[in-house]
Structures are given as C-alpha cells and as structure tokens.
Image (cartoon, rainbow over all chains, first blue to last red; front, side, top):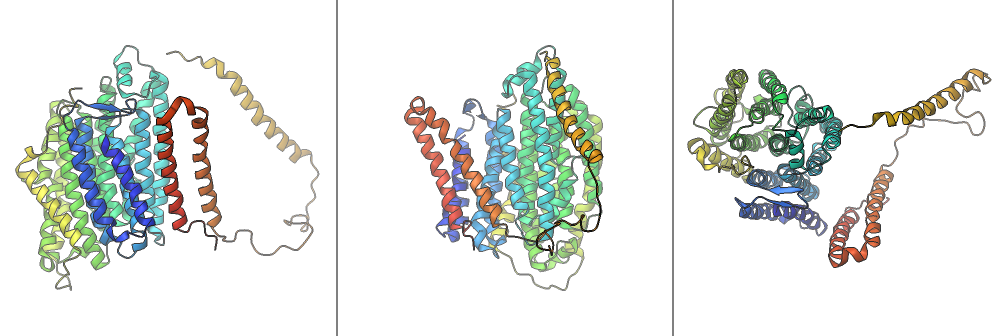
Length: 463
Length: 121
C-alpha cells in the first residue's frame, strides 16, 4: 500500500511548498507526483494480496484498481484547481494539500481490511470535504453548505461508530475476515444485526442514497464548483467502493436479510433522484440529483453480490467518474465565464464554442446510458449482474428511470444546440479545463467502443 | 455471546439518584427560598457601575485559533510519554518513528508560524 504513504507525504510536501512560497510550481509538481504514484500503485497489480500494518490495509486488485481511479480523478481536480482558484493565489497550495489529503482518505477507504481503518478513512475524507465546502468564506451559500454537510456528516459518522461498536460487541473483532467468520457461523447475535443496519445507514448517507439524500442538493449547490466536482466523483466513488468491500467481505453470508432493504433503497434512490432532477434549473443541482440517481444504479451492484459484480461496479464508477469530471470541467469554465449556474447559461454554446458543446453532449449522453458510450456498457453490466441474482423488479425500475433521465440530460443538450444567446464568440477558456475535458472525452468514447479496456479485478471476488 | 446486563443496574440506580438529587435540590430551593421582585432586584447587577450595552458583542476569533492550536500541539506531545516509558523496548526503530512523528509536527508548526496564525495584531 505504498500509494497511501506517498500520497500522505505529498500532502505534507504541499504545505512545505507553501511555507517556502513556491506556489507557482505546486500544480505541476503535484500532478506529476500523482501520476508517478499511479505508476507505483500498479506495480503491485496481481500480486499476492498483501496485508499491511497488522492487517489494517490489504492491497488486493480491488483496492489497487479503485486507488488508481481515485488518483486519476484527484490529478484531474488538481490540474483544474490552478485556474479555478486564480483569484486566491495565496491559498492555492492549501487547497491543493486538502485535495491530496482527501485522496488519502479515499485510498484508505478502498483498501481497508479493518473497521478502524474504515472509520479513519471516512473521517479523513469527510473532514477535508467539510473544509473545502466552506472554503469560500464570504459566500453565505458556501457557509451554509459546509454547516449542513458537517452536521449531517457528523451524525452519520456517529451512527457508523455505534454500528461498528455493536458489531465488535458481537464478534470481538474489528477485522473484516474475523467478522465474516463469525457471521457465517451458527447463532448470530441480534446486536450484530442491529450493528450492521447502523453501518448500512451510515454508508447509505455517505453515498447519498434515498432517504438519506437531503443534504446532497444543497451542499452540491452551495460549495465551490470544484469541490462539487470532487464530491460527485472522488468522494462518491470511494464511499461506494468501501460500501461494496465491507458488504462483500464481511456480511456476504447473512446478506439475504439485507438484500431486500437495499433493493427498496436502490429503487427509491433511482426514482427520487431522476424524477427530482427533471425540474431543476441549476446545472449543479441537476448534477446533484443525477448523482443521487447514479448512486442508485451503483447500489444495484452492491445488492447483487455475485462473482463479477466487482467488475461491474468498477466499470460503472470509471464511466461515471470520467463523464462527471468532464462535465464539471466544461461546466466550471462556462459558469465562470457567464457568471451564472443556471442551465440557461449554456444557451448557444454549440455556436460559440463547438468543442465544449460536443464534449458536454457526449458526457450527458454517456450518463444517460446511450450506446455506444461508456455509460451504456456500465449500466448494461450492472443490470446484467442484478438480473442474474433474481432482482428483476428493481432492474425494471432501473430501466424505466434510466429512460426518464434522458429527458433532463437532453434539456441541457437542447439548450446548447437550439437556443441562442447574445454571446457570439466565446474565449476558449483555460487550457487545463480543455485538456481534462479532452481526456475524459477520449476515455468515454474508448470505453464505449472497447469496454474490455477496463481490467478485470476478479482476484477479490474469489477471496 | 451473553452479556450480563443485570450487572449494569447499580449504575442506572446511581444515575437516577444523581439526577434526582440535583432536580430535588433545585426544585426545593426554588419553592422554599424567599422571593422578592422589583425593578431594581431584576436588574443584572444590583450594585456597582451601571451596566450599558449588550454582552453579545463581536470579539476577535484569534483567541479561539490560538486555543485550538494549543490543544492540538498539547495533545500531540502526550504521545511522547508512552514512548519515553517504553524507550528501551521500542529501541532504534521506535526512535525513527518518533523522529518522523516530530518531523511532521514541526512541519505543521512552521506552517502555522508562516501563515501568521500566532500573530496577535
């Protein structure tokens, strides 16, 4: 788990750069370092899944694959932060170090094999996000977002801790393998079940699933756009992977009792997320509800714990992350230029800046699940796994809501291509936004044409 | 696993007694104690300089910042005690780990000095 160590040191190195007034080089240095860490991370690929620090962390393929995805996401966010924070240069290195520390939390979350590490990872991730959500000090909406997120998040953390305590009380161990051993044995204590349900509630809160989603739209809307992008991609993917890891390793044997809870939650999440997104007129709020809906689709993968489900989940998160990151890269540059977060701000983008409009159209279509883009195969794999485990009713809901979602994604596309604005020629925008959007575009198209490019992470499922 | 929950009953009794004692005493003093009400009696300060203004005025958050930083570093120094006690057992590896820890602490310390968090004015 060298990636985690190096990332932590990178975060501290940012602070050192800040001390020595080297803010000019911090963005390129951190991006290059993150890409180097990405390379180091995959040298452990397909190795014998080693455990670290008394089995606190385990570097199996599942952990390494998700770590890689998180590092790429973080590198993209850091690359954009240079031009995003161009009015607050004095704080740039601080913001970047907080982003890197968020990544640390994410890495701990996808590679834990001990409940203590799960909690630490979740807290490092959440606390960094609370800071970033409130980082626009003089903006009252940013303050509101930070306050709401902090209060709700603290409650969720408390419930998680309570759940972990009860599970510990029943099993006498924090270790995932030990807990699995207890859970598969005869005579499971009722407090174990209560504990698992509390952990379930906390995890559902962190991935913003219905009925624990109420914080998400306000927090997404109020936070600075780059932080919103981070919550939608990095934080959601890490929490989802942690959720899957926890349930697939520890609670898989007495899962039938929880599967129906999850199927109801997943169906509700998809319905509420997609239906509420229909009449949003703010770009960030729409993406927030679309993110809730996508959490519902990812829950399908957690619900159907089957041999290939880890692969389906990984493919889904990759497709979702790149579409989302690209959409935010373009959205941020447009919203900044036109000083509005409404969907009307995108009017006439097709004429004034065709590249941005084409890229954003592709990301929206990918999220809606239109072939031949990455999002189509993502949904296909997840639905396929769910059908294999006899969750047909939920899949029907998923397909219907997916059709509904096309409507609001097209609202944005129509605004860009059919409506006019007074703006005639738009400046190209900062190079970093364009570069990130281009990379995301290439990945979204490539995965749609060749879905086998995403490596198989089956090593975990056989454990 | 059977938890002997009955052994917690004394704790509950004690908690009930503690809460009940406080409630009874406050209630009794309220009921039995003398009461005189007048405009002068109800003022915040019965004697001394006449009060003016509001107690809820904005004041510098510098104090909180320094207090929080103090707590942070104070708590981190606590880690030195277990290390000092087990110095011989932990040996040279323990020394390296503590050096790393203190190094990280120092980076944080220099950071807050450079950021001007300790300047009062």
